[in-house]
Image (cartoon, rainbow, N blue to C red; front, side, top):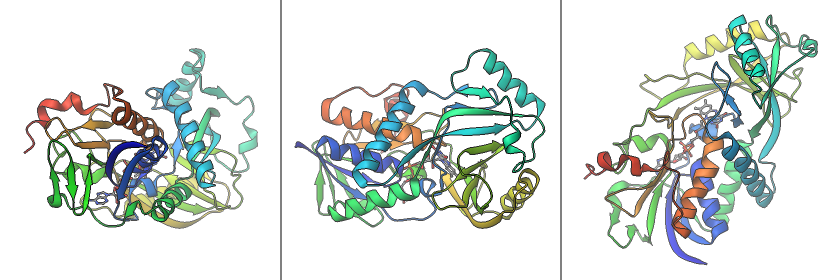
Length: 355
Ligand SMILES: Cc1cc2nc3c(=O)[nH]c(=O)nc-3n(C[C@H](O)[C@H](O)[C@H](O)COP(=O)(O)OP(=O)(O)OC[C@H]3O[C@@H](n4cnc5c(N)ncnc54)[C@H](O)[C@@H]3O)c2cc1C
């Protein structure tokens, strides 16, 4: 058993993997999480897409992050007795000729993850589409709805979860350790998502929070063997006949609630896209902990050296969180360096201004 002890604040996907790797490494820990329904980890579709953007380029560190994530979800899923990740493909309907051209250009450059359907007629009973379709594979869908509660239950049975809000004013830090109420530990690590932007230790980091919404539909006639994309994403949920659909990105918002505007725009888009009947059965919203430079925040505060962070997952927490949680645990247990692009050492000057 490693002698270190850590307080982890937050049990979204970041806190889940940080505590999982502490557990597998033999580091003692306690998780403090105020159960809140509309966190991004609970609202997310759980999609891991290997390509991104209008130009269909590979995601950052695809060759490292994707295989790592697949293995990490399989391992935690098998430990918990759930199916945490499924490999799938995304059927991408080109919304306009420009997107088709972009896709074909990437194909001619031998992009790894994409191919064109020679015959896309299999989809015509279900979808309206004019400009053809391609396939993106392998993609993955993480079963967040099963994983987060299953790990939470495990933490509870191990007496490693405190279900309440962390109060920063009660945290005492010294050069040697941290003290929070009756808990003494070597370090505290914040995996507090969008709340991190108001965290007294890390509020100076360049967060760029944005709000996203999702709608759950019931469409029993739609085949659940792919993800589908045409500006919107449609992802099958575990419950037969249910699909997740979204999303949007709003940088100006004054609350965390779902909006009538999103509901109206999705309903309109689905009516145009789907040929099969559907019914809206849910509508959710959450704030993404995104960052200005679209890179995560991992590591330790330059002044309060026992205070750490794993945050800034933006719109890609499902693929980023496992790898950077592992890096942080390796850094704690074996002093392994963090990847420079994620290490908050890059903000040393700005963070040194924190009181
Ligand atoms: C609509 C939508 C769709 C998305 N779809 C995808 C997707 O398909 N694929 C993908 O990879 N990503 C997706 N994302 C992004 C993804 O959800 C985030 O990157 C990820 O969930 C961030 O996880 P986190 O654990 O860092 O933060 P969070 O999920 O915000 O977790 C933080 C946790 O900390 C707790 N907490 C905060 N402050 C305190 C405190 N003071 N005391 C106690 N507890 C506290 C919160 O209650 C919460 O449980 C989506 C996001 C949205 C909004």
